[in-house]
Length: 326
Image 1: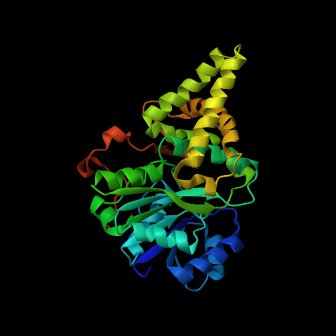
Image 2: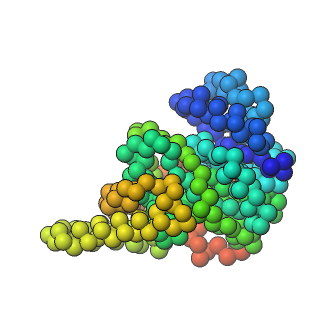
Image 3: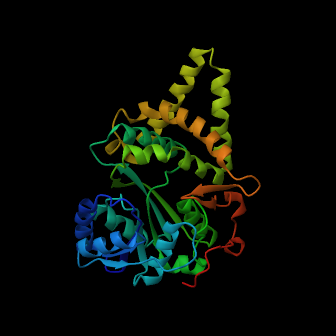
């Protein structure tokens, strides 16, 4: 992995689990060059600088004018990187050496690689709840993980990607595809991640529903669920059939591409709860969108969703609000 670098965009306001992250970075730095782009407040940044292993490069994000801080961290990492192969990952992702080597190896044949995340044991109730979303995504395509591997030169040729959208991973994937890059959906490349707190999980319910506004077909289906459930409220047998269908779909996702190796046998049973949640939260997200401009809020700032898929057809049609020369 001498030609690769690991980029971790970080922004903590509450301290996080620093000891766990440092142990992980210690392991990573033995396998691959590591760069942490840290947008945390000054006090935490200084604490991180002292705690991180000496082999880890630690940098502030460059002032690139991105509304989405994670994108600013990624683009800073791309500018500062010394390598062609880049692995970008959230702070809760925990690669093993084998999974990291495979992700980097696949870049020999692709411009962007999309692995599959799963939660490490022990899995609390909210991890199982969120796993149902992952399984349904797998049933109808691929999941959107907290990590991607990319070729630096391809992203440079595309001119970067928009730093003013909410669903930044989808924006990056679409940007690479629009620039003519090849994507590998490595649904059998399982990369573990740690589970967030219950408080964070609850705070993300409506926030995650905003992502569907970048996927009109999915939005239409999910928006139809609540009216359908209300119409069937006096027909429990049909509601039970709807719940059973969600379990069957999730089980299909669990069995795809060797998912049974990492997803527990009861994981699909949580699907009705997640479907019911999304049926409500997608309407709450719609109510919270700014009229006319179609923007959602993140940390008090307005962010549009990525352009719908059919609008992104070539790199010349991508208009980036984040102006940066890579």
